[in-house]
Amino acid sequence: MKIKIIALGKIKEKFLKDGIDEFLKRLTPYSSVQILELNPIEIKDENLTNKILLEEGEKILSNIKPQDYVITMEINGKQYSSEEFSKKIEQLTNEGIGEVVFVIGSSCGIGKNVSNRANLKMSLSKMTFLHQFARLILVEQIYRAFKIMKGETYHK
Image (cartoon, rainbow, N blue to C red; front, top):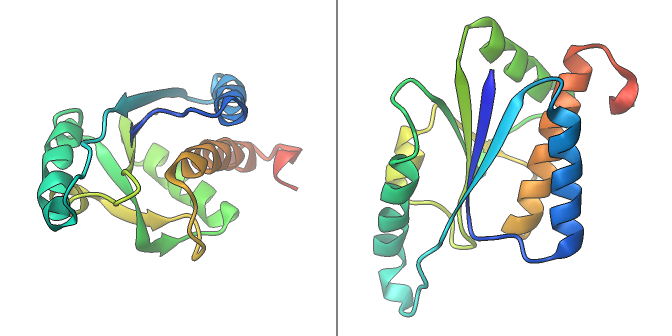
């Protein structure tokens, strides 16, 4: 199974880049993981937020194929334990899903057009994280999911 993470914005902090790169390297024996960074649209007028999220959504959707399984990261999405998340990834693998696409929006969230396309809406926590931290946490949890699936010791 291939995994793509579509994220709005670039990671600026070196420690976050280093952490993400480390987990991407660790993931290579398990899965092909690609991160696609899209430029967010600057919101100068808060009254235009929904309109801009829809525009960003069109950019996101143009990078998703009809057969992709899409998981959006949303505040009110389903929360999983690491073990449950691992079982979900394993289930998708067993179902023959070719590519899973995770979507991390900007600090303002994601547009309804992207949310409506999601096969699954997921939340990392009830806590709020910077969206740049969310990327690191997501990549680590994907790695952890594969380690759990293989019965390897990392997850303890």
